Amino acid sequence: MLWSGWGDPAKASELPEPVRLLLRDMLGVRAPHTPAASLGEVRLPPVTLPPPVLDELRAAVGADHVRSDDETRVRHTRGKSTPDLMRMRAGDGSQAPDAVVLPGSHADVLEVLRVCAAHRVAVVPFGGGTSVVGGLVADRQGFSGVVALDLGRLDRLVSVDAESMVAEMEPGLRAPRAEELLAGHGLTLGHFPQSFEYATLGGFAAARSSGQASAGYGRFDDMVVGMTVATPRGTLDLGRAPRSAAGPDLRQVILGSEGAFGVITSLRLRVRRAPAERRYEGWRFASFPEGTAALRRLAQEGPLPTVLRLSDETETMVGLARPEEIGALAADAGCLVIAGYEGGEVAALRERVAAVLSGSGGVCLGADPGESWAHGRYSAPYLRDSLLAAGATVETLETAGFWSALPGLYDAVRLSLHASLGSPLVMCHVSHVYETGASLYFTVVTAQSDDPVAQWETAKNAAGEAIVAAGGTISHHHGVGRDHRGPYAAEVGELGVEILRGIKERLDPGGILNPGVLVPPEGVR
Ligand SMILES: Cc1cc2nc3c(=O)[nH]c(=O)nc-3n(C[C@H](O)[C@H](O)[C@H](O)COP(=O)(O)OP(=O)(O)OC[C@H]3O[C@@H](n4cnc5c(N)ncnc54)[C@H](O)[C@@H]3O)c2cc1C
Image (cartoon, rainbow, N blue to C red; front, side, top):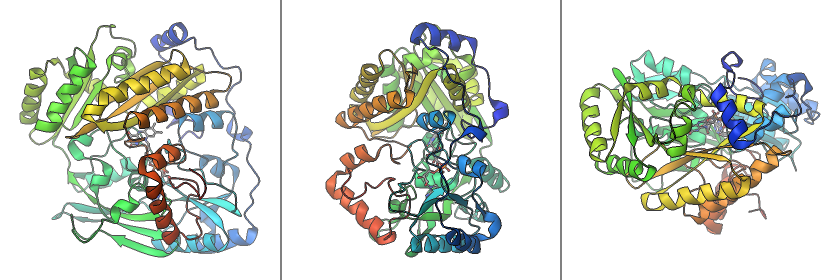
């Protein structure tokens, strides 16, 4: 993974010419004055962890698995939001951990937590490092140091219960490797977020991730039937049946807890048969409201395809759903729907979905737009790096709401972004639908000001306030981290925050796990 950007550096590409022209003519984007820092130029704070503590950590996991060299520290600094990348490109490594610790077992994790609690060391569980909400930055105040707990060595497919269709898998497995291991048994998770190439199973569970095929396979939290969690107070082992009436479901306390309550060391996951066939196609709707109504019909009356995504007029025109063809479509292209069908009875499913889409005013565009979307589905994060280098800020934000609230949410977010940023390019799509509502996912492109981090943070905070005021949730699948902590507290209310603090106090009395992430510290909202 590129330390200051996304993905495999070999896959980095030049900005397509139409995008370069669009940026200059529409947004006034100018090349930045200063080039991005090199890895060696990143400024790191001194390691503050006392040597005896490092020795105890080495004793816990083995000397080879405690690292405090500069490169390893840089590679575990922050996540992959646009402000994270901007800070790294500017050579700002101020939030680097003192050391990176790689446990090899659940027992190792318990021992690391014991050592860290005894010496007041903050612990940041680290999966793929793709958080976009500041979930990998710990408060330092009151701690003798910070360690990143990299779960990459916990990467086994432990067992497959083919009768129950449940696989036990370790949290450090990256999604492609998890799929590869399951494919050996003819199985799949069906979880394909845009961060697929690097994100891990533990990160998916800890941040309640949702993938591009959520219409067919569900969200990641729907897949978790059980888990083992290491906490500073000991082990939690949760989930012994698919559903239970035995009190509140404590799995739900850990799902979405973003490393603040415990470290997930094992997951028991519902799996599906690997699809015999995959087919994707495009549909055109005259307007976003018309397309939204069609998606609602599918979500409420069925049948749902496996992938369902509706771009608004701007996203359709820019062609963001098909990164390789950015700018290729005319301004009156309407709104593009991508529908994907995976499984054994693809033709029959397609026929039923097509009847609903055409009955709702959709025009079938054939396989090309769908196959091209599938081909480019992981390209956008690479494009972000090229845009940043060209002097444009590009970032995403997302929310969800009930169907009746969606038009208001859509308008509120767009208005707020335009008010903060002047004339940005704001694109939106719906890609996760439910009987009662859906998510809205916005992509924003704007010219960078002299202080692009502050520029984006102002705009993002204003958009967050607009989301809360319009009745949406502050996140459908990115999570809370540090960036959404305030709006999340507003969503759950004071009593809700007290409950969160109570759970944290019980599981993590020293407050060493991801301090400042998810749960507002006492006295802070
Ligand atoms: C380009 C890009 C595209 C993205 N697309 C999507 C998308 O389509 N859908 C989506 O849902 N998200 C998406 N994300 C967000 C991100 O990938 C998800 O939140 C993902 O779940 C994070 O997984 P990770 O392994 O990288 O976790 P990390 O970023 O390493 O960690 C995320 C949080 O979980 C905690 N954590 C990690 N592992 C554990 C563990 N084992 N136990 C306890 N806590 C843990 C961390 O401390 C942190 O707070 C995207 C991000 C990027 C940069």
